[in-house]
Amino acid sequence: MQDQTALALQEDLSDRIVATGCHGVIIDITALDIVDSFVGRMLSSIAAISRVLDAETVVVGMRPAVAITLVELGLSLDGIRTALNVELGMELLARSRADEPEDLGIDGLSATT
Image (spheres, helix red, strand yellow):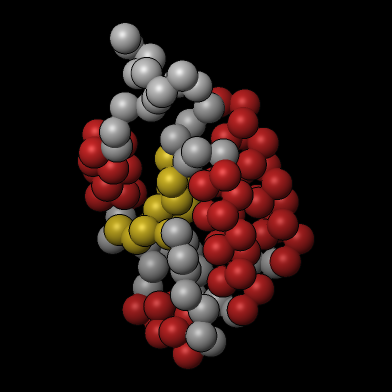
């Protein structure tokens, strides 16, 4: 993945989160054979932006060599959950949303009260 592609992904993704109001982002990195510190930081940045926009990030399809490289680079993917494939990532997001407490309005009452 080239740096410009990664930056475009980050910008496009944040625009889509705002436009759709989604609460989950799945990033499939199956095609990545290797990563560098830039891609690792970009994934962390996407997760941080997504959290601010009320969306959880799940990375799927991480190869063992990619995971080892991230550890060797000292990059922790804070705020990013992982799953083996897209289907398991979708299940993870669904369970996560089901476990969240109901959103409270400004006055501290639930939206349904």
